Image (cartoon, rainbow, N blue to C red; front, top):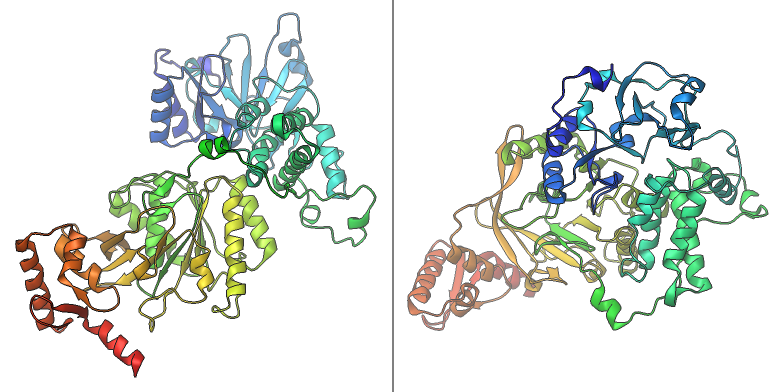
Length: 621
C-alpha cells in the first residue's frame, strides 16, 4: 500500500496531520520549511501528547510534520536521487526489500519505505548509494499528502537490512572500555549529515560560555550527542566538535579539553553500548591493568572560576510546583506513618507528569521516576483513582516506577540511577522512603545520614534542573520533629513537614517552627488536606471552603508554647478590634471543648493546644 492510494486533503493544517499520526502511535515534532526541527525541539522531544502537539505547532508556526523513527518504532528506507550524485532508485535492487507502506518524500524526488522496527534496535546508515536508513534518533518529514495509514500497513523490516545498533558486526567480543570506545568511534566515523540527528544534537548544545556548561552538566550534554551518534555516522567528528565547543576561549586549556574528552567518553559508556561487564568493570582481574586500558568515567577539573557575569547569567532553577517543590533541589517530605505521605507524593508526581496546577499553584510539566520500596502493587489503583478524580490521564511515559534494586547506600545503584536520570531525562526522582531505601544502621548518626544525602545530591546534579524528593518520618514523641540526625535537615534544600490537624485533615509546612525549611523561597503552611475515597483507592483533596481565621488559629497553635491573640492577628494581617474579638470567641470555644488551654486575664490571655501542653509538662517530669 502507498500514500498515493489514499484520498487525502492537502490543505489539512499541520497540527491536524500531526494529531492523526500521533493517534497511530507515531511520535511527532514540528519541523520548519528548511526541514530542521522548530526552535526548542528535537527528536528526543517527539511526542504523541495531543495538547503538547497543538501547542507546539501553533506556537512555532511549523509547516511540516516530523516523525521520530525510534520513538515511533519504525525504520525508514529513504530513497533519493541527487543531481550529479548517487541515484537511490538505481540502487534499490541491491537491497532485499519487501512490500510495505510507501510514500513520496516531501521534495517529491524521493521515496520513503516505512517498516516496523524489529525488537533489537537498528543503527542508521547508508546500505546502498543514494539510500539512507533512518532509525533510532533519526526522523523523516511525513508529507500531509501522504495520508495516515494504520500501523498494520508497516511490514516487518526484512532481514539483512541495517546492522544492530548496540552490537554491530566486528565489535570486540572482549576488551576494556577504552578498546570498545575506540572501536565505536572508528565505526561511527565519516561526515556529519547537516540534516541528520548528529548535526541536530550539536546545534542543541549551548553556545560557548553559556552557564549551562557546568562541570556536573558535561556528561548530560554529551549524552544527547552520543545518543544521536548511536543511530548515525559522524561520532568521531561530533566528539571533536563537543570538545571544541567547551574548551575554547578562557577555557582553552589542556585541563578543560581533557574534561570534555572524559565527559564524552563517559557518555558513550552511559548510552548502554557496551556489555554490562565492560560498563561496570570486567570480571577479568587482569583487564584493569591491560595495556591501553583507560576508565571512561568523567573526571571534572577540581573547580572553576566564576565571574560576576557568570553569576548574573546563571539560569535560575524553575519551581516544579510553585513555592513548594523546587527544581535542582533535594527535598524531604516528612510525616508520621499513615498520614498520607505516599498519596501526597503520588499526587505531586501526577500533577508534574501532566503539568496541571496543584491546589492552584503553577506546575512545570516533567518526567517523574517513583521508587516505591513498598505498596507498588496498589499504585495502579491509586493512579486510576487520581485520573478519575482529576479527569486528566497520566501519560505512561511521564510517570515511571522502580520497585526494587535501588538503595542510596549502594554506590553502583546510585551510579546507574544517575545514568537513568540523564539518559531518560528524568526531572523528579521520588524515593519512598528513606528508611527503606538506605542501609543506615543508626538514623541518628550524622556521618551516615550525610553520606546518604550526598548520594541524593549526586543524583540531582547529573541533570540540570532535576530534583530528588525523599519521603521520611517524623518522631511521634518529639512534637512531630523530623526523625533522625540533623544532617537530614541540614543537607536538604527544603523540608516539608506533614502533621495531622483537626478531624481527618492534615497540613504541610515549611516553617522553621514546624521543623520545616525552604532555602530558596518563602516559608508556607498549606492546610485542609485530606484523603478522599475514589473507587478502590483514595486521592488527596483539600477543604474547599477553609475558614481563614480557623486556619490562622491552628497555624499558630501548632507551634510550641503559649501564644497571644496578637499572633493570630499577625498571620491574618489584621489589626481591627472586630477581628480580635472574633478570634477571642473562637479560642474561648475551643477552651470549652477541651482542645485548647488558656492562662492569664482576658486582654493578656495566652493559649496553647491541650495535647502540646501535656507533652511539654511530661518532658519536664
